Image (tube, rainbow, N blue to C red):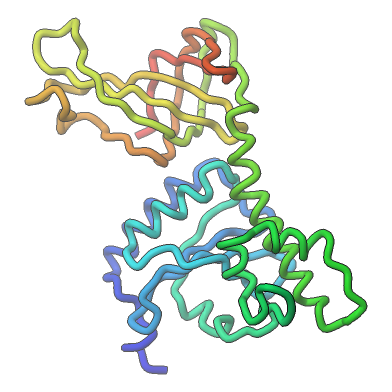
Length: 274
């Protein structure tokens, strides 16, 4: 096969950078029930694909195209899986090339006749859920279609339903004064703030994060050194981004509070795993 048409557009260094970001993102996630996979773009297919691999099915499920740039694709995948505990993987497109031409996922009836399930799932997931749970036909030709719809229903639950339920499941964690260990938290929001008790610009990071069970935490990452401006971090500080996975080696429970019906745990004396 022509490598100019199928080879990745990225250098080995760029691929390694993506892999390292995914490894960091996967902390606390499991692959017991399969994995989600980002397929790398190629010269022939200039976009990153998003797939679901189930251990009981040999054929991977194509969900959607993510983006045409690596950074945008990674960020989009992280957002989709931010409240899902299934591991994410990165694989070359060659692994998935045999499955692009499948025809068993094409609807042959109704308002979406001629469309693929992945296309319908993107614009109207309720229709795919109807196929998975309520569609009844005596025609055996539709059995594979219904089976694929049920796989999409699992994806819908993992990346959509859990996200909607996320704010309501948060509970207070630990007792006040208790020291917690080995927390794996996904960052939801980062706000820079200046420490007004110091004469120079010492810019701290106020973090809002969530664990795998949906419990929300707030804590402050203190500046490692002074900054040159009030809206710029010190180069010695660890810069935190939304969707980052943080491994907190230890932290002390300072307080619990409720805001708009959601429980929060405020942490102090936070020590990150470097």
